[in-house]
Image (cartoon, rainbow, N blue to C red; front, top):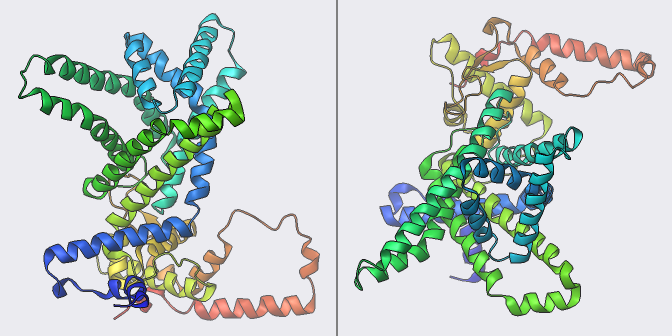
Length: 439
């Protein structure tokens, strides 16, 4: 096979392979390649690289107050030594940065305890932490094509639970590690190498588990464990390899120090943050692609739909929802709508979001991430005509023309345009959307 043939296969041929044409192991391998190709395509076509840069900056702003909160909770439980050791291990590739941050955190906690940082300063610190976690959630939701965020109460409860549980989890992990290390020397020469191997592998396992949990819990949608499993493992291993790369690149770091002096720690730390968030977000993209592989079409990320096809596809989706409701069926899920219409999953989600904003459909799950979204008509289907749908979709948006001088539209030609549009919508109001249901 020529080089052009290989390129053509990965661009077109791989998407037309059917399950019955290959054995189960070979088809599994094809699906793995499809997932990676789709994730890479989405990763390069979307704003993920810019998002990783933005999250790196947000992390820099919120790192000290966020670590201070965790340290404060840990000190309340008497776990401060374990938390500090864990934090130094996390930044083992950036020891100078770790020392500076711990110094800032201790100073910050002393000042808070003495009452020096109160009021506005404390609110600013709290704001940076909340904004960081909110930005992370929004970025994850963007990758998952989730348009709604958690409610305020749920957000507060989740964030508080996260900060209280994190020190406990860290202490448990540290305790297990210390116990295994202590007992390894007492188990004999045969068992000791196995324990030593487990200790070396433990950071990879812990980091992978952290990524799996983040990938499952952070997006405001239901993420399957099987979808997050191997992306989480890949991200965890990649993060540990990044750590090893930084630790063993001392010659490069030394030459960098010769140029920037003591200031070298900051750009190196920023680069580490950027690479870390890039790994994390690529894992999120892999999760999304892994879970929706069967529903994605040949060109799943070509979302620039023209107005004509936007109206046509919206009418098609709405007709299925209305007809199913009239027949007494259960509310339609995005997967059922994709199966019934052939519209790619991510486009279905985008169109449903617009239809919901136009008050044409409602999500009966109420935004509960633990339940699969399901949609039904927002009103009597007899009132949902094509004219009503077009009129409402055209007026969806957050900006109004209040700042525009409306006198500009008071001419004979504009009146003719408005009259033609009214006649157009009047004719469309004679067409019930449910009558457009595909046979």
